Amino acid sequence: MTKKILLSTTVVALLGLSLTSFATPTTLAIGKDILPLPECKIILLQPDITGDGIPDPTGNWRGIWGYWNRNAETIDNTIQPGIQAGGDKNYFNVGHNNSSYNPDQAVANQGQPSAFAPGRYFSVFATDYPAETALGWYVTYPKFKAAWVNSLTSICNTAKTQLFVPQSEWYLYGI
Ligand SMILES: [Ca+2]
Image 1 (spheres, helix red, strand yellow):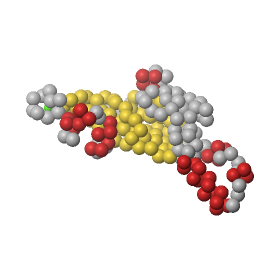
Image 2 (cartoon, protein in one colour):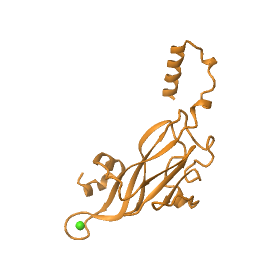
Image 3 (cartoon, helix red, strand yellow):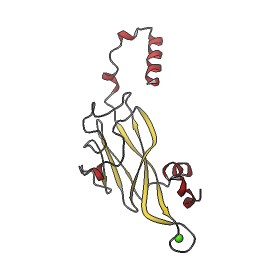
Image 4 (cartoon, rainbow, N blue to C red):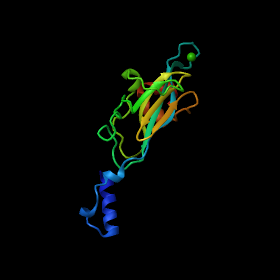
């Protein structure tokens, strides 16, 4: 909101126009892509079970996600029906090459946003998935965009791990 007000004020100042001469910004501010952005993964750990004193993997990975809404407006399902979390324009599915919409909300809705604010956002939410597999996020506004967390996804740094792992478990990661 602050951003919008500042922008309008700047434009008005530059052009010497009154606000009333502006068309509604909504007509110009939408229609660009929303990009789902995978960031990194955390190999989830549990206390040592093999007896070597070193924490062991749980068998699950935690993928961290952000997004980039290139529009100047928040995009939600009033603008794009189906873009609510788990809808057919904003869903998850398992596997590297499985982009088909699965309406099962336990699969399709992994806690992603239902409304995409303007701009680029990091570390918005996390999804758990079995180690050595992949999880795809598929967003359509206006074009279909796909992204995955998988075995190739880089390991999160300490700061990001601290964001998405409860503090009581930081010791497992040596932090
Ligand atoms: Ca161990």
